[in-house]
Length: 223
Image (tube, rainbow, N blue to C red; front, side, top):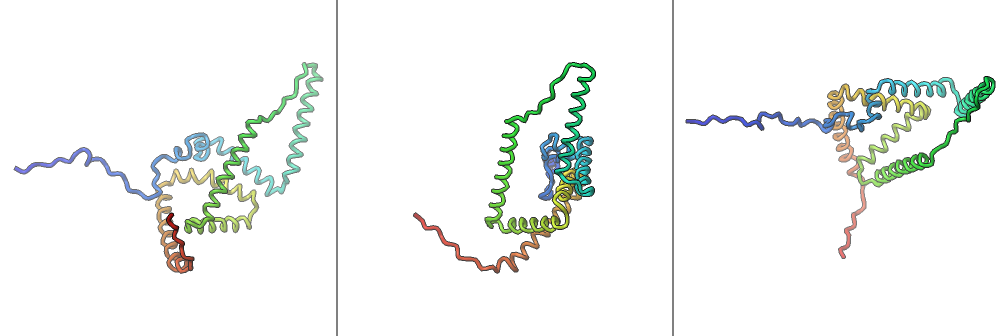
């Protein structure tokens, strides 16, 4: 009598999807750190995200559209602050209240050191990355870096640094939220774009880069 073969439970389990290289294994919120920064970037805290966009828009409008300068702005802010403190301190004397001491603003030495160490670490990391790219061992990465810097320089020639920083901030606050909403479509387009770039690089390497003469590689002498 023929035996009836039953599928095991393991066969019934769905196989993991062999998605593209851009398939996200974890939620985007976790990949961004899962803290307050991720909440701002993904607009989970809408009030704070909208406040940042509104503040950046006001600063950009003030300096770029109204053509306000930084030094007069700082002087005017200092004048207003000093006037407010002067009126506040003298009103207390007029109404016969006990004189209060002016609030003191003391910068913490640890905070200044922490900021200096943070900037030093970021600059050192950026310098090491640039030196690693300029080494030329990864030709594809080197050409990509050159093309990216050239694109940024072209964009920067048509707008000011403040406008470029403002557009960058808008992209940082908009792109993660849009990616989370249209993840499948973006992954599909990114996969196709990556394949097209690989084909273009192979053609460039076979037609141009491969024909560049290079010096002979010296073999290391064995001790």
